[in-house]
Length: 171
Picture 1 (cartoon, rainbow, N blue to C red):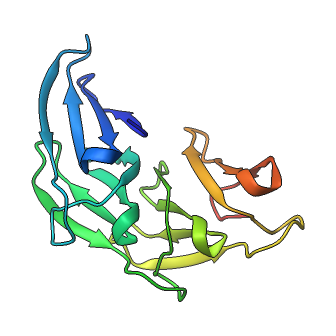
Picture 2 (picture 1 turned 180 degrees about the horizontal axis):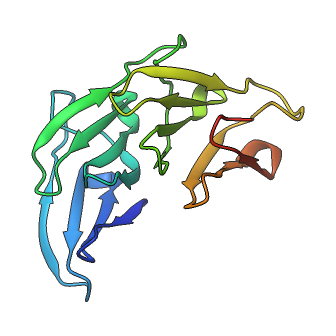
Picture 3 (picture 1 turned 30 degrees about the vertical axis):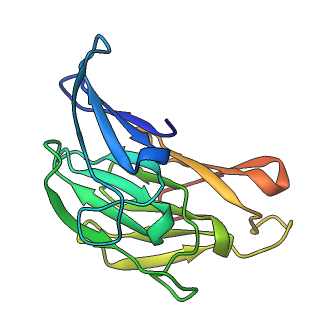
């Protein structure tokens, strides 16, 4: 297991990276069901890592092995993807973390490209934050990410052994 998020009903959604799936448990830890299987087609996953849920209870799964974010319903029905492999805006290289802010923006740690990418609620690319390095506005292998209820976004910058705290516009 790697990432975890919870639904409004208390169900736990946990990425099972080595088995390329998401497992769902009740609030007491009892197994309910899973979704996803190994592959690169729509609805398939390859080494899922981070996971988050928006206020409409759509499940965002960082599909690291496929360099994208896959989006599902809480029942595991595939909806869409964000991104493809690459270095341009809206593209990923080894993404790891995902968070959804209170305004339903999707924030993704694009680890291999040393940046955080932000998407609007319709999953259009809004911005890329940071670049490779150790300066104030740089990242070196950003991994974990959290959007808190106040609108702040916290990013773990693993390679620089620090945490960045961003406001809702990314600065």
